[in-house]
Length: 293
Image (cartoon, rainbow, N blue to C red; front, side, top):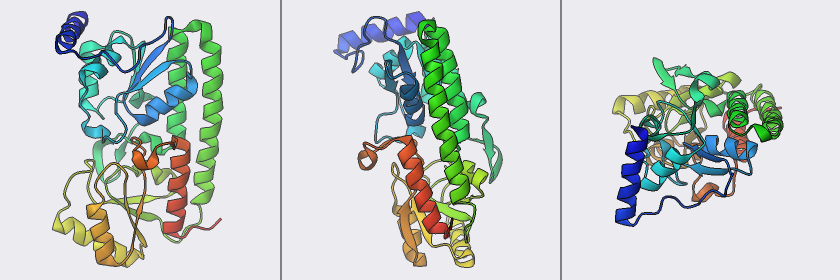
């Protein structure tokens, strides 16, 4: 059935003049389709010689991504699809209907947890915990070694090097956030729950959906929290409108800064990497919460 669906898509693309994808793999080159930026970044670190396609284009909010024809073909033809089931429904559908190669759902590998504010609702933003992303790196290397056994040792070695950097990042977060005047951050949406590992509590303006509108009751609770806890900063983010965060900060007379959920890159973060963005977030958290080392 998958082959039939893909063939139909290919014919439709030819009839409409659509190209199959921006890049074509070289003979023998491993191809990887990663559903959003952190997974694409990990894949490129482990397999720099592979053709890696990020199914979430820079500047787009990954929660609501819809696959283009070209992206559907890239997913279908990929030797390995790295994705997180439940985070991007369009990608889940593409995997179920079209994927011909190996698929890796990183959720079970990372060990997803529920939102602290909504038990029973899984929080997909595991990459805020570098050690969870490290576990995913190991799984990506393992699958690539099965697909391309001639280079398995190279994948393992690069994954090990990446894991050392992620362990160092985890250590910096633990030490950098160990002694803080405050432990609560107000953010645009609930994308930072895994920072609980470092003693951070998150008070989101909205829930999982970045574009949702807060209710007057929600805003009143946040205003009281900011007042009672002496919170100095309200954080907006890069891929969603800062209007709600900016308005709340203005009303309370506190700063409005950016805390990047690192779901994808934008014009403002072009040239950055997961590691540099995580360290930028750490500096912002330390400043907002009055942390000392």
